[in-house]
Picture 1 (tube, rainbow, N blue to C red):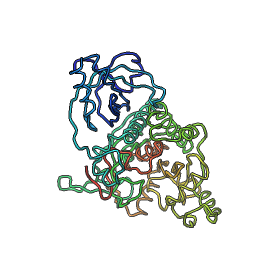
Picture 2 (cartoon, rainbow, N blue to C red; picture 1 turned 45 degrees about the vertical axis):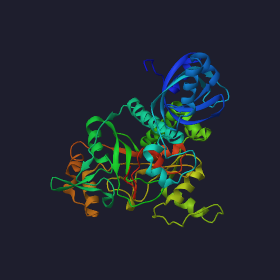
Picture 3 (tube, rainbow, N blue to C red; picture 1 turned 90 degrees about the vertical axis):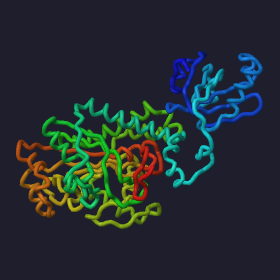
Picture 4 (cartoon, helix red, strand yellow; picture 1 turned 60 degrees about the vertical axis):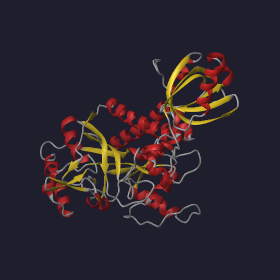
Length: 448
């Protein structure tokens, strides 16, 4: 095929013109003298229509019938070069249709396993390499792409430098019980849970830094919000206050939502996402509530008919039902700040005058999506950090570089991290995090 190919998403620029598209057959229907072919090329879905009389008129009866018969016999996922005239079509959600004038088969497809009927989750996950071709999965991946693009754009516009942290490490950034261990030339090493500790070094060198890459948590969890391998954005910055950090996080999340609205509106339409809700999350300020006030609210409302969560006392950690209730109560993404130090990471800075609470925040997304961001101010005092590590019985020799950061010009600094898959799930409105990453790794799944 010598003709220049265009993407389906660009057909709007070629109305009335003949174009050629490289695509796969997503579906096919029709009878008699007409055939409808649903085409996809990764950018969008698009309907082509073939009329038998037009083929006979253009190619003669024998060749025209032969070409039309090829179209009638197309199987799902056959790859094709298809040529035709682009026409506007108000009946189509896409707004355009292709009047097919020629079609060439590139690769045959026989007995494609994922048919238009309903399939179980295990079957679809076993065939994830093919399930990705479906309309909804394509839409989720487009939203993921828009979020990643917007992440780089936001941090570039806000003076951050991309700073790559290692994936192999000798220590834990978070819970040491959730580490994947491997052998590193006879010594134990661990897959990274977060780039945060190394990013703090970057913040002391470059002021504002962020990284984006895969992280690993050996959590034996089967919830709809957990993966053992996922992609995380971590940001660290010097000389920012706690309130300024929350402002930055809010601006970042709003930029991600706006990026999806701008770059993937058709994907949101395919997924039937409530776009007005997303616009409201951008327009309205996020709520901020202290951990202790949130506990009090939960206690005051636990007898309400529409509540479904266990009683909590001050000092208890939230479960998913509590996070859901809090964010739904406020109706917009909600920061819960100043959690108890007892169940937060060793590096978090205490609230001035209240050492039992730390300067941290979790951002809870509404609609039942729970925590999407975790962040804190970091303990910048060397002696205080050493005392905390001693209290927890930590081996300080494993964190010598981290402690050094407090010895040579320490400054107030903080950071936050976001699991991209949780953000994708929230913005896309999907039910399970496994659909937010191309090939999910979960407790009992490591293939395909």
